[in-house]
Image (cartoon, rainbow, N blue to C red):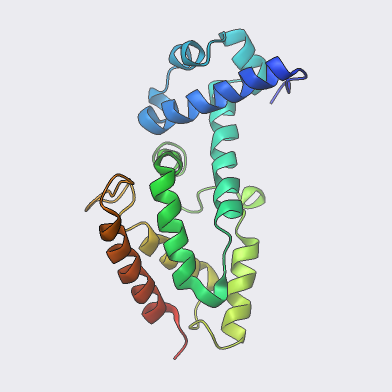
Length: 195
C-alpha cells in the first residue's frame, strides 16, 4: 500500500473504499470487480484509491488479508473443543457471508491448488499448535493437525454461501440454525475426539 490516510477525513474515505470494495469483490470476484463502481460507491476517485492501495490487486489483497485476520481474531480456535469452534465459524459465516465469498474468489482466481496464501502470510500457526497440543493431551484424534483443521473448517462450511448443496442465511428461522448447530457440534465431536 502506498499511503495511509493521515486525517480523520482520509481515514473515513479509506474505510469507505474498503467497505464498498469488500462487497464489490464478494459479489463479482477479482476480475469482475470494477474500480469505477468502487469509487462511485465510496464517494471518492480513482487517484485516491490508487494512492491508498496501489492497484485493484492491492485493494483486494488488503481486504482479503483483513478478512483472514478477522476470522482468526473473531473466531479463535479452542482445540480442546473443536466442535464449539466449528459452530462459532458457522455463526460467523452467517454474519459475514462476504468473507467466505472473498476466500472463494481468491481460490478460483488466484490459487486453484495448494494453500490459499503463501507460507509467510498464513495465519494458522496458532491453530496448528493448539491442535497438536490437544492431540498430545489425548483430546483430539491423531492425524496431521493441518488436515484436522481443514476438516473442521470444511464441516463448518456445510451450509455456507459457497456450499454446493445449500447456502444458509441469517434470515432463516432461528430453530433451523439451532438444528444445524447441534448436528455440526455432534458431527465434529464424533469425528475429532480421540478414541
